[in-house]
Length: 88
Image (tube, rainbow, N blue to C red; front, top):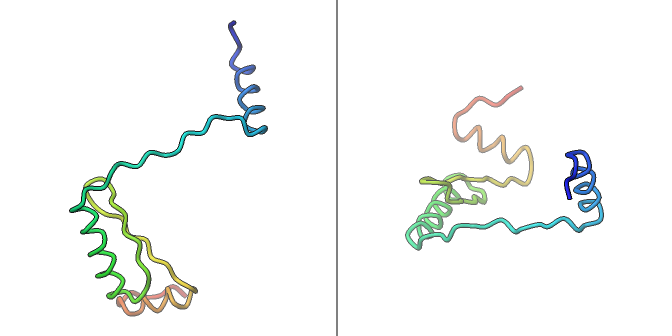
């Protein structure tokens, strides 16, 4: 049965609205034990240096860091400690 693009789009919207759209969970590649050890080491080191929680995630051949702050003031205090000018 051949369908037009518009008909397929309409069916997809209806399925999505009714919660019937097939959703596949995101697949995460297994993290090598050495890489996991590096993640923990980096998280501890940056957490101590920045004085805040740091989430480290393997990203390709490197790492991505995510900082968490309770407030704008806390974030700007880190900026000041790093020696950067704070925006007005």
